[in-house]
Length: 454
Ligand code: ADP
Image 1 (cartoon, rainbow, N blue to C red):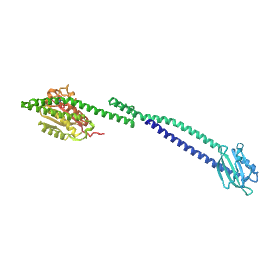
Image 2: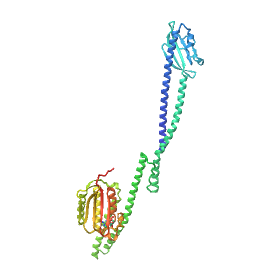
Image 3: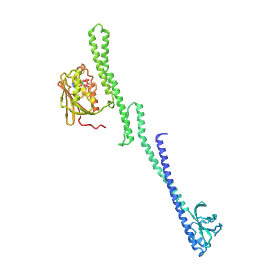
């Protein structure tokens, strides 16, 4: 059975049972109350009649008394202890009651009896008559009006149950449709994704914040994540296969050269090993950067903390100085603090320092300071610089300003695009200012106030 039918069936059945139980209990309570009321009233009336008759006994003939006290819709009679007595007196329409068997009761008795498809209350009250004998005065009265009222109530409740079920059924149908709509849309979209191989999204209608909308939004987020993952993997495969072709060809051609003539011409040996070594390093570096770029930002394990930027710059400069044997001066204000991820910020700093050492020969300056609510680190070189029309392009993947000029420096054009991704994830601002022939300044800016991390 489909979910929609299940919702429909179970909810309708539940509502119907609830309505029936409610109406049945209402009916039961009302009928109990009405019948009991009438019994009490009939009993009180019978006692009153019995008292009245006893007082008038002797003065008025008993048969006349019976006639005087006969109920509008019933019968009255007097029975002696031997079961005999005067003939019963009935109202016009209830003559058939006189055929009821006369039974003497020693105690007061109230009972409901049926006669000719009608319901009656019969009350028997023992009285001591004027001659000292204990007699029964029995008053029988029709309950038909109460029974009619209960019959009307039964019909009304039945009709009300049926009428009340109509809007309930409609709203259950509506509810089923409301719940099923996003689920059906999601199933349809999933089938479409499987069929077409495209990462389709659900269309989100309205601005509701309910669980169904949340589920649809989560589904869209998940599809976006999958799409990003897929794109990144595709990009990685195509970038890697494209970019690794050149160094692999160079390595292969030098290896072949060595194989053919390495033994006869030793001068070729040195050149080939040099080329193979540098291409291998380039490939390693490129693969590492490509792998990092292929990672989802969520997998980067970022932790934003308060950092002493002056100390961080000093430490990075020292490590760099040792590795590259280049002079780096750290200037600016001591103890400047900013909020970022320490490891990723260092990585960013290394990318800019690496570019500064690759594209300049003079000393490099690292400046730490703060302006308004921003703390910054500037990496300043006095190297070849970048032409203003090329400046916006240097952040693109694999873009190199001048391939020939950069080739010997070993750059693959991935450093700055990686810098953009890192900056975005750790929430810092990066900027390149450059004058061709004069030098370049890279700026890393970040907040000095603790950010709200949700
Ligand atoms: P690469 O690995 O080639 O350095 P990047 O993405 O880091 O790749 O830089 C892209 C290009 O931008 C470089 O090839 C270079 O031409 C230019 N560039 C980056 N930094 C500097 C700099 N400090 N001075 C001059 N040119 C630079």
